Image (cartoon, rainbow, N blue to C red; front, side, top):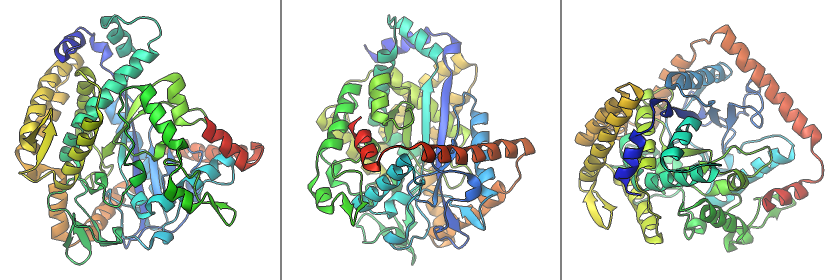
Length: 515
């Protein structure tokens, strides 16, 4: 169906269809006030990292993750994220939350603590998975932090959108196909988000164990890409030969699930050589291309809330796509929460625009080209001579960005009329300014500050200290009580899981991987 026709169909929807459901997962390293990664365990007063609904850890014991609930109101979404930071900060002993995506000063690989989740089968699985990531990719690259943006459309939207598309009955397959169409268009244009919101042009020199030709020294202890937007989203430190031949095209749920499932079951010689166990202890969950589907890194993922002990891929296959997770957003180190309402508005608009555009299947050739586009922008997005490949030919990034922004701005007028606001047109105007003037991009502004402060470490420490003052402002007594109850409940939930486990871990792991 042509894009213009789909846009006209969208205009037929009532205003009550345009409600966006959003959630945020924000990662942040715990660091000392000197800028070194914390070696302390996850704070006991923050409950169970395994079972807490909103405060957990990612790869490292030092890498916190704050997970909001689902909100249709942007202010409430950010207020909850802020409350999670404040509550957590009140239980950090002389530590700060690192302000940026690229990590603080890092020790040797083996000294970076891996997250621990207790003695239950599922807790052990989570820790062993992280050991596997260490042996496959190293620990340092796993300390990079980001903002993950979870997004879905309301049931009212799907009811009306199905109606104008002449779809009736169970809408599970229709919604799944529409979300996959969104994902394909997102992958075609996500380089735009790297340019507009990339905020990691530099890193501490301790991040790389070997020099990279893509980076230049900046002072005595920093590395940077002169035109970089997002080192986090580049392939620096994340060489992944095992995944190089994976063609995850997002053309359908069936092909997506089959490709990842096969990778989880396909042996990889280097991982077989490493071995499943050493001295009786697991080094990885298996010796295959992927341990589990989450090991495959993508800038966007189709998601479905899984049941306890259920693999995400199993949940998707049997119940369809529930929401999408945008994974290419850097933490903006100029903002306490790493993201603000203006960015939320633009990403909302961008995602809906991706849904409405025509979305042809992605060939192997196009898939490889899209990956090259992303890498070019991540490492050289502010280079005025940079070319992006689009629809069979190369275009200058500013020209292609202007064309894309024009389409988005026209779309914003339609959505603002439907929602009775002007926030989407305003969001486009703010981002349009970055295309007209590269000095307004976060990556340029961050790099300018780093140069003034003499190093990435000094700049990030300054921001971390500034945000520590922000997060030290007390919560209301009601908020404190609410989060303390969840903290206590999370410990009880972990104890219950550990007490009710049956059978051996080996049997549990075999059953889990068979899903």
